[in-house]
Each structure stands twice: as structure tokens, then as C-alpha cells.
Amino acid sequence: MTFAEIKKLSDLFALALATRGISKGDCVVVMLPRLPEWQIVTVACLKLGAVTVPCIEMLTESDLTYRIEHSGATTIVTTEENRAKVPGDLETLSHRIFLGPDGHWNCDGEEIAMSDAPFESARVLPEDPVVIYYTSGTTGPPKGVTLAARALYVWRYAARYWLDLDEGDLMWCTADTGWSKAGTSILFGPWSWGVPALFYDGPFDPTGRLEVLARHRVTVFCAAATELRRLIYEDVGAHDLSALRRTVSAGETLNPEVANRWTELTGAPTHEGYGQTESLMSVHNYSCTPVKSGSMGLPLPGYKLAVLADDGTDLGNGASGIIAIGLPNPNMFLGYWREPGRQQESIVRNAAGAWWLTGDIGWMDDDGYVFFEGRGDDIISSAGYRIGPSEVENALLEHPAVRECVVVASPDPERGEIVKAFVVLAEGVAESEHLVSDLQDHCKRTTAPYKYPREIAFVADLPKNVAGKLLRGALKRQEYERKGNLVSEEIGVRPG
Image 1 (cartoon, helix red, strand yellow):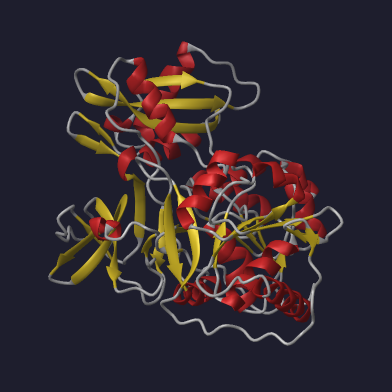
Image 2 (cartoon, rainbow, N blue to C red; image 1 turned 180 degrees about the vertical axis):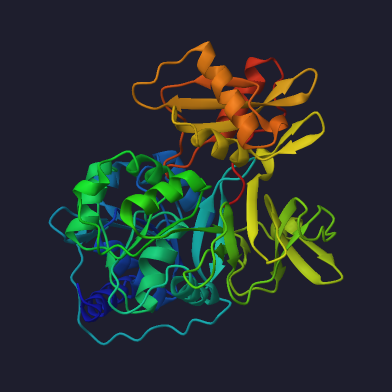
């Protein structure tokens, strides 16, 4: 599809919404698969000044009901296949719009007739809310992270400097449409540079991924670390990936071993980035700067980053602490929907100004490179030592017997917590006590000896959420329950 076609179709859909009374400030839940209609509907809502609430199709009816009620959405747009999930008795929900298998739209039982009457976009100001992403926290129901129109413009710069997009590129990001990554790397980022985006609606299949990359001559590929970990075990050489010039990954820690192997197999550099739903993409490895192994890279131009203590004390370079983003920042979210003041809980001030505490633990070197150690709740405190799980995971992944792994804290009466690793073995490798000792010795040689996993469990697979992210919190909770020390609050994933 061309940009001209998208413009016309989004105008038509925006006018259809407007004639049904949907206007600036109204919340519209958009739960569509990876189809062009998702982009058309999203752009149409922006033209109206409506606030989109992107949702993944895997949500249950109760999940969807919560998001509709909490956001106060007046409208939902989804497929006919999802009709059974849409609640029929919500007072605020005035319109239910379904996309049929024939490509026609149906609203409240009537087919939508698209009018080609002139349409004029609403005037949207930089501080106006335009999108709400619901994200899980450490406790309680999901929070509605509300982003302003100004943030969409900032994503243009992440696309330019991190994705390195330019004329002639074809971008493929595999993220689900309900995640903020879809916004940054499928719609707003690429299109703001006039770059086409490939959209593929299908389940994850390693061989299929490689076939699509080759068939469509994708030049810039964005995939979660979990996907790349699967792809490096495929016969990559059987596919012509000569058009691929760059791979990027964000959302979870990308182990250097995985990044290096994918680069070896494809010949294209693999660069990690870091961000949260609240602050979007903030730290990147760029094509124009040196890459340091294990680092997420440098801040986006214009960003101010520091490593702070809980009270805002600047810990300086080389010290481990909370990664913080200086305020004001045009990419920073407006706040949590219907929870005024909650944003302030993560803001501290010092002599250098105000800072947003991401809750993630890391450190910066003298060149400004940021190194991620773990989510705040994932840090393992053992005998006075603070151990980041990714450090141990990176060491384990260098061992040829390990295919996948995740490291969590396990309670211990003497050390408080110990490092425990859950390991998926490579094909053909059998578990044994000897292998446990071998992996422990390997970790002692590869990283600081006190970080080695004192317990190792071999498992068939690892728990992941619908986005493919490893669920460390579930395994950590399992460990505390198994050993009789029930945690007092739910352990989950930090915002973003």
C-alpha cells in the first residue's frame, strides 16, 4: 500500500468515526492483528484527536473489560473473531466496530458506509494525550501509561539514530500491535521517515522468519531477544539475507553471545536498545558510534541520564544504582491514566534537577555508555553482594550445553538469597550432576566467582509472557513458595 492510499483510507475511517460522535479526547480501544487496518485505524484516531488504547488479541474478556472500564473507552475496534470477548453491558462503551473476514466494517450491527466527504483533522497540541499503553507493575492491576503527542514526534529521532532508517530501507518489526514497540518501530518511527514497514500476520516460526526476511529483502529487522535466541539455531545460511544491513533488539536483555552469533550468521550488525513504556526508547547502540560488549549504548541525543540512589544521590560513573532520566523530557509520559500523582512516586530531585527513576539497575562508564544489570526486583542480594541476573545468564549462554536460561534469586537461610539458574539444554545434551558442576565452574571462570549459580535446575522450557519476555518473577515467586518463605507481595516485571 502507498502512503497516498493510507491517507485516503484513514481519512475515510476518521470521518466514519466522527459521524458516530467520536471526537477529540475520546478513548478508542484498538485490538487488531498485524494487518494494515491496524495502521489505518490508529492514524484515523490520531486525526480525530482520539486517544487510542492498543491491545493485543491474546487478552481475555476480563482483561479487555478492565481496559475498557478503566480508560472509559467509548468505542472498541476489533475483528469479528473477537466479538465474543467484547462485553455487551458496559455503560461507557457506545460503539462496537468489527472487521469482517471480507474486509468490511460493521458498527453496532450495521455495515459502515465510507463517505468521501472532505475531512479536516483536529488540532492536536503537544501536551494532548494520544495513546494509552497498559503495562503490568509489581503489584495491582495494569497501569495506563499515557503518552502525549510530543512523544510520537520524538520516536522519529529514535528511528533515525537507532533504527538508522533512510530512503530505500524496508523495516520489519515483529512486535504485537498492542505493545509500544509497534508504535515506535512499525508505525510512527518508520513512516515519519517515509520508510515502508513490512507487516506479517502469523505465528512465530523460526524458519518462516528467515524466509520472510529473504523473500522481501528486509534491510532493518527488529526482534525480541527471545526470537533471536531461537533464530541462531536455524540454518541461516540456507536463506539469502544479503539485503539485511541492521538488526536491533529491545524489551529484554540481549545476551552478547546471541548478538554476536546472529551478526556472524547474517553479516549485519546487531544493536541493542533500552526503553520503558513510560519513557520509550532512551538508550541505543548506533551505527555511527563504537559498540561496547554488554552495553545498551548511549542516550538518545538530547537525553540526560544518570545513575542515582533511591534518594536522588548521584552515584557517579562505575557505580551500580538506579538508571534515571533527567526531566523535563519530551518523550516522558504524561502520567498514569486516572491515577493522578502516582507518577511523582518515581521522581526525585537533586542539585542537577528532577529525575525519573526507571527502577532498573545499571551503571555508566566514563564514556557515558549504559550497562544494564537487571530489573530492580530481579537483583539478587547474596551474602552482602548484589548480583544482576543477566551477568550470570550471559556466562551460562557461553557454554555450548546451554540453549536458554534464566537466573533468579532463591531464598537461603545463610546467605539471604542465592543464585539459581533454570537451564534449557542444547539438543542432544543430557542432564547430569557432572554437567551441573561443569556449568558452575564455567561461570566461576567467566565472571566473578561469587556470582556462580549455587543451584541449577534443568527444564524443558522457560515461562514467558505473551510478548515472549522471560518471566523471572514467576520463577522467583516459585522459589520462595517452594522453600516456605512466601513473599508478602506479588513479584512481577517493572514498568516497561
